[in-house]
Length: 540
Image (cartoon, rainbow, N blue to C red):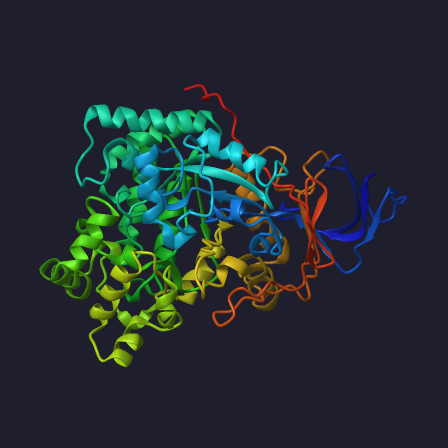
């Protein structure tokens, strides 16, 4: 063996009982498992894992590292958590497929998620070219962790028809279907949407169904950030189930939360809806992060009509006093669709990051607090930030409910996703803490799930959704993407006060049999690559 991990408690990802064994790794794969009681395995290197659990590497089903993986070779935010694979292209907005116009617009639209990209040579335009760039990574050596990609429906719509709030023409819809098919053929795992983000939210259900039919033909899955997590949340979940049922497409409900006061204690209603659909034969999974606050951009809460025409048109409307007053009324009185149909509560919106360093004083304060300190109305403060920061401001939105979080994570189709935005001076701690928080706080401390079952939620279940035949289990012949952690001490270091603190109790992480975390420290290994789906469509 190249490496023998000796005497580990193997939590194999299946959800079954753990067991002690030697794990032999050779050629980047798990070559042999030898349980206690038999002859010991031998190898070129032996790692004593007494007291440690060995599990498959964790799969982050909702990541926003689209540019971070090309900007930061270290990427300890994820590597130190034991994440060995991230799924990018989330919420319907990312950087492929694009043309020059679309690329410029999407860079500005999601500056708050990923920065504006001016520090990178964005030399790709197609999905395949982006995946090739991930493969090359840094000097041809690769990236910190593996990455899969979802085709972003909002970007596709932007490419085909701009930022207009209208139905697509038959020609435009054909173009969108073609772009989705090309991306799937080039290796994408499915399609994402951001149906509270412009321009993706302008798509009617018939358009989304037509795109999902293409996804189904290629054996991918649809991953919607659906139309409401607030006033219309349960109907929005039902809409996604009906839509994908009509298209014959697998469905993965991303950051499947129920937020705002209108949804307190309503998780059982969501789970009953999903159980009925599953019993009817629907292919459904979901992911969540183990925290109550959400995280997005400040611009995302605006009403959809304000986003027509793209970022520059949004800024022009905000600068116009009369139009800005209409926006305020929709936000504070009506309940804008961008704010999930709930009138905005500025006390719940905390500024987590700004693009302009001159605005750093707003970070860590709610909009309401900053407004009081400035002696002005909250909307005046929010409008100032939106304009002066060029829509690049990120926020934490404190609107979740712990009982909903716990109930949903117990469900049998649940997986883990950080939704981790790495930008900003005070990002959400989920970016650095999701997976150890699941293991330490929710499994060990609260007993919401057993350790074995929690590991299955973070490994084999997402691997099955991604249809990866050799990941997600500690099994002979599978890739040696594994994490070793101490079940007694594993914990998220990240807090809302210190969100970039790395976790504790995860001393070793391997990708392709190579140490990316060793003795608790990041090595210089770049073992990550793009993970592509099969290029041919499945038979109908």
